[in-house]
Image 1 (cartoon, rainbow, N blue to C red):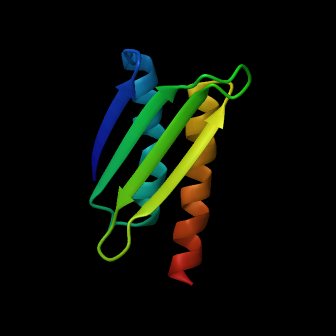
Image 2: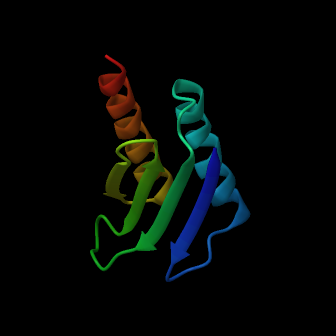
Length: 93
């Protein structure tokens, strides 16, 4: 699975990119049909939920897309990955 990380409005550090890739490895173990994961990290304007994480999984057929916002990029990434894991489990059944 290819992982493409894009950060809008800031430069993502190597530690953040490693964290995102580590969390996406869980999805790769669940579903080997995933071709690519496109991750967009963006700082928002809100005072509370100002770290956005959008993940699009490119899968044959329909792509999966999730948007999450939280107080940190780590939290928003974790929420997005957990939601994608639920979607994958639901589609397998």
